[in-house]
Image (tube, rainbow, N blue to C red; front, side):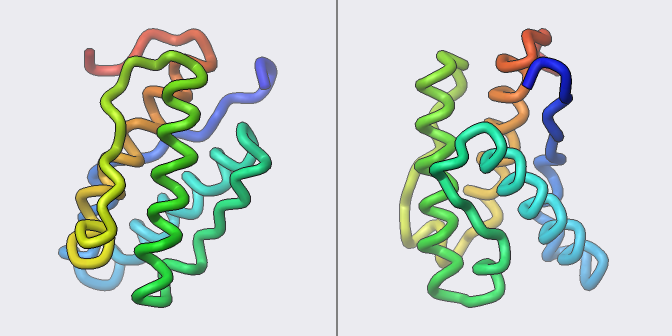
Length: 120
């Protein structure tokens, strides 16, 4: 892991659904990047991004993403606030948990690479 930089996500991309078609594509690409990065660090997580196209399953799979990120957060002692795992929030207001996931992932990646957290 030390020789390869971990990808970072753009937290504001979670709200891309408000920016019409290109914003939705941006959100999907960022979530795909997040799932790929977490799978590299924690292979047993087996996160898959394409579930976000199925309404009910997307909330359940977002919950799996949150659990994996919270586990990495505590494993690497990042100190970031845990992402709340609330199925109602995941189902109806998925942009906010995704925003928190993207933000926490950036902090985890910074901690793993030994870099100082950005904007702290």
